Length: 426
Image (cartoon, rainbow, N blue to C red; front, top):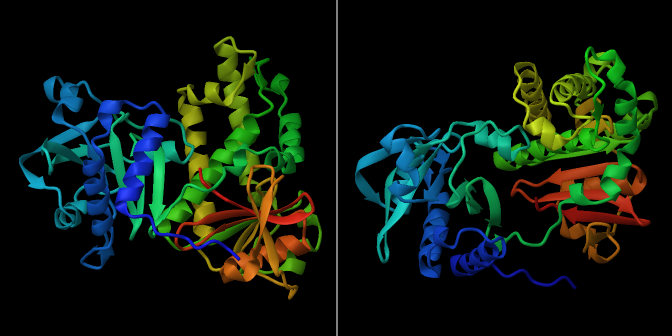
């Protein structure tokens, strides 16, 4: 029998947030008292349930005083565009609803401060632009910085994220505190499944063919870039609230009947070079960072080196990777599955999973390598999840990533001879 889930109320979320804030050794003066945090979260939650015209409320607020942006006001040296209201407005769900459209979620935050005990007011807007989204989704850090202050985001009705600047601290969705989960990208088993593709790309990249460069590429570089692409895709799909499924088939699947044996596609791509977009971009990125690394005197280029490189040609390639992520997210929004091979080669989308095999039990991983698991009934999950379970159970080499409409994400794979899922918590 599965344990009953108990809803988390603002008072519970506030306590958990303060514990995490302290455990991460974030500035103690950047998070207010427990009672104030409760009011902040409760008001945001209530605002998330409202609608302005026909649109749900989606916004970000930052708890900060004008002093935190002194440079912007004094000499304009801050990279942020901060606007002060002539008169502050009470921090209420109604005012958040009315201001959310002006302070667009992707471009600005509403600035909130505590003027006196128990009194919170909205005093202005902090315009960040949209680059912060790419930073969170795995892009290069070109976005303007935010101070390490408490930021609360409304993603969807009942879906709240608390952060320090851009760094996610805690998330709550539908009264459920999202604290139990894993980041499979940090596991050993997941990168191993993509090992031959990484080796193939690194072997194809020959530094001797790149003019003026003898610089090598770190073995982890391809993995790191690929993971950033997938993280971005998952974030986009979660934020859209539609749900979707991403399926990885074995390396040589496109040369076999596997795709058509297991899927009925709405769209099946011609298996020509146009489906190798990620492969081509990776080769170009490696060639360019090798040249830049040589100029910097580097013998081996790592992901951190890449993130610090400011180069027009590399910026174009980085933008192309971001656009590729958006393309994958768009195709995932079509009912069915987006199907790739492990080299990110596009196979098709809108894939209906075939087969009538029944899966009665699924194991929930209790650690990254699934050395410890807990059996659960598969019929406790939705139709999309059960389709993924059926696919992976019949095709053990496949990996499925399922995003539900409420933002829940599960990685599904066969590991240690068990059909297993990992709740994703980045």
